[in-house]
Every structure is written in C-alpha cells, then in structure tokens.
Length: 336
Image (tube, rainbow, N blue to C red; front, side):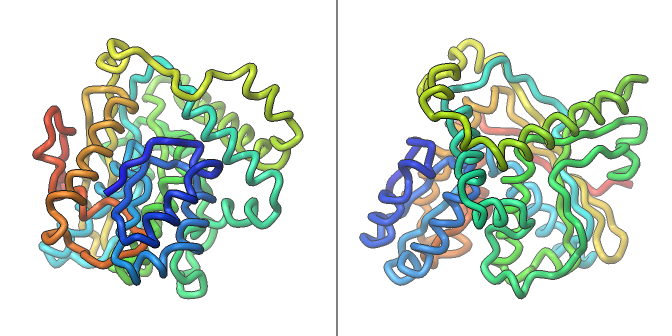
C-alpha cells in the first residue's frame, strides 16, 4: 500500500498511479487537482479494477469532510425510509487557518496552468461532472455554479440571518461528491443537487462581504483558468512559497474548522451532518490520510467495496474515523 503526499500531482503523480495500478497495489493521496483525478480515472481505472488495486483519491481536507458528510446523510435517509437526497449544501461554518503552505500554492498554480494551456482541460474543469463515470447518464439539473452568494435561509431554517459566499474548494469537492453518487449508481438520487459555500456571518456587512468574497474567488479562478499560462513558471515559483514550507506545528494546533451539510429528501425530511476538527486543515489532512492508509492496510476485507479501480474515501475511511487519535468530531441529526 502506498500513501503519497508529493504534489503537484498533475506534474509528479501519474507514474506512481500507473505503477500501483499495474502491480495491484493499493494507493491513497491528498490531491486537490481535478485534471489529475480525471487523468487517473481515464488512464488507470480499468487496469486497477483488473489487478485489484484500489486507487483512492483526495483523502485529506479535500475531500473527506465533503464526501463523508453526504454519505452519512444518505445512510440516515435510507435507515429512516425518507426518500432520496435532493438539494444538499455544505457550509463551512467556522475556519481558522493562519498560513497557507507552499504545496497548496503550487497545487492551485499547476491546476490553473493546466486549464489555461489546454482548452479541453478548461472545458472539463467547468463541467459539474468532471469526474463522472458516464457523462451521458448524468441527470440534467440545470446550472450548478461553483461559487454562490446565498442568504442562509435558502439553505436551512437554522441559518436564517446568515449570509454565505463562494468557497475556494467548491470546484474540486463538489465533483468528488458527484462522482461518489455516480459510482454508487446514483444512490443519493437522480435529483441530487450539491453545492458548497462558506458562512460569512450575520452582521449588517455580511451580504456585502458575501458578494465581495464570491466575486473575488470566482474572478481569480476564472481568470487563472484562462490566462495563468502566460505567467512564466520560474517567476511564479520565485515569488510564491516553496513546496514543503507551511505553518509551524504550533500554528497548526491553533487552527480549527467545522463543516455542516444540510439536505432535504424527496419526502421533505431534513437532515444535517457535521464534520469538525480542532486543528487546522494541514494537521487534519495528516490524520485523514493516515486513517485512509490504515483502512486500506488493516480493514481490506471489511471495506464496503472491495473491488479495485479509482475510487473515493467515504465508506472506506468511515470505518476508521472514530478510532483515530484526536479524531474529528462527526455527527448527524434530523432537525425538528
């Protein structure tokens, strides 16, 4: 079994995926790069399925909280017999991150360079079903924009008064969750619509802040996906943090985050799932990736899906999350 943290994966990752798929060796990573995932699926999913290798993508802050919350909402709705999931929205309710790592900067840079230099890649990353197993089989649900400014009451009654805005990880996480639905033959539902936003509070300035954040994030990524390749690589590398650098251990310990995912089912039942960790995203990613590796190494025969191929973490990792030292808090409930 191989765990890899060597990114940007678009630049360095595919040879390792190829080797694991060929050898039948289980693999997990913490990528946040859509085109790396797309290429891994296109090139090595079938071979990995034939050899029994499980290629588990995105086992960190991106995208375990997103994937696992939705999976638990689905399980609960099945247990309660309340129908399939419809509108489902993740909200980053709280977040403390005091520094960004050089690896994160390199990942964003490489993703935008790939999209801006290849029209087909740019088309794929703007498709809401970038990672789908069968694009023609996906339901047509109209526009599913990545960056949304929305009043909280549109998401759930308990968010009345709050405003939410664009979340920078939404373009990646939403496609991971939609692939999970497709891999399970659309078990979440054919009317399953998924989005991600971040809470910007409930002050008088919140609606203005939500508009500003959403516009900034959407504009930066949109322009980057079109024009980033015009910036010389050496110049970008000279002025940005170097891969391997990042927040100190003390800084990581002071961070925290909380995700809440809200859904309404076809019968009108409402549920909420919460995923929280009292460390920052980088420290949390280390725990999540390690638990994914332990699940692959020690729980292989008990995993919900034992077949090979390019897959995602939710069911595999769920079996181990509560066993982790300093594990994330994880819960779900049905509001009254």
